[in-house]
Length: 164
Image 1: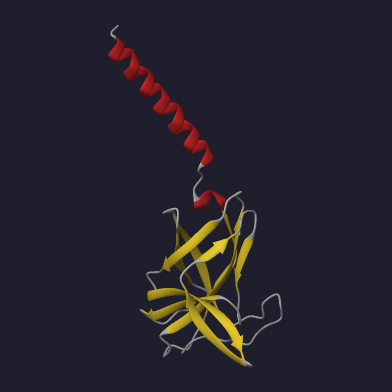
Image 2: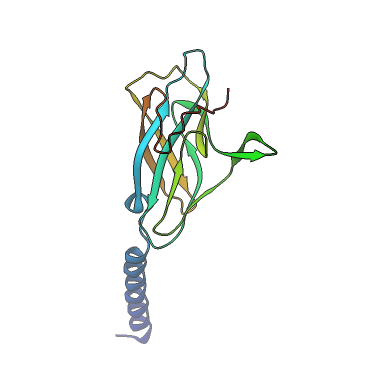
């Protein structure tokens, strides 16, 4: 066997070992993301927007950065943060959300939430819509959200704040 063939064989073997190691170390968001209580607020049929709520838990040892979302039910999906300045509450769009290692992030009524803008048709109670979360890693995770009437969340907030 020539020296070139030996080196090529070694490089191929090293590449296979590296690929196997990377596959073991790098896991997908779908495997590491846990979803709890995903729901979208039922709105009157004349409304062209709604809000979504969910608790996302990251079971991995590294941060997961949520950089976008989409849904076939709406023209646009955005992350919004509620802020209080000088006694006034306002909402602003947030471009990314960090799920800390072994931690969670909660979208909830009256706080950070997911906005569905430009609903393509009125939402119907007791159905579900999918929201696809895009992560900085390139992973996309589709999550079913149940459509339901406003509910009091765990903190007792039923303020119903959302965009019109």
